[in-house]
Amino acid sequence: MASGLDLTNGQLSTATTPVASGDSDAALVKLSQEGHRDAFGQLYQRYARMVHGILLAKVPALEAEDLVHEVFLRALPRLHALRESSRFGAWLAAITRNMAKDYYRQPRVQHERADDSSTADASAVTGEQARTNEAAEILESVRSLPEAYRETLILRLVEGMTGPEIAAKTGLSHGSVRVNLNRGMQQLREKLGQSRAPASAAKNIGIGK
Image 1 (spheres, rainbow, N blue to C red):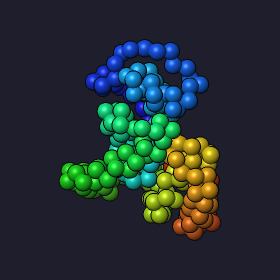
Image 2 (image 1 turned 135 degrees about the horizontal axis):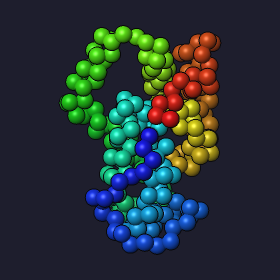
Image 3 (image 1 turned 90 degrees about the vertical axis):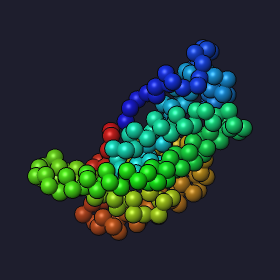
Image 4 (image 1 turned 120 degrees about the vertical axis):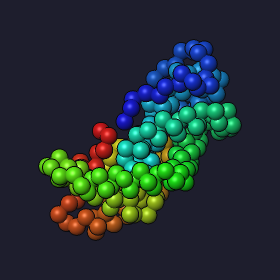
């Protein structure tokens, strides 16, 4: 996943205010609303994993990489309308989910995905491709779970976020995250079977890491 956000054509000014890495998210949101590019860059660094994880639960892995940037670029001009800066994570998560829905509304997506799959079927399966296929199979197992479970599982297993971090970033309650992780893990174990536990399977679906 790319490590930065290109705001060259964005709407933030080049005005600079000292932005400390320890500033709260709410403080960074306020600064971003005032037009400070560095502050929004800090928010990108803090929330890119969450955005990528939510996208990965819904769209092809390669597309998720590019869409991370699109989510932040979509959020940028709307940031001034966010009244509760403490709700930035939940607000951004909603934008991310809507971006994933928009992705599937584009007719060209279906054709591209069909072409990609036919190319994969025609190619020789090497050792590396076998591992890639296994990762794709595991990821599809996660994606077949209920939405709440697959989001939290990917944030935990692929993005490496802790339960409390998932709650803080997405705006979900700690109890909801705990329940989603526990039930999601149980269902994933049933799908994968005893030969591949979720913890070891996570190493194979660290796409983009």
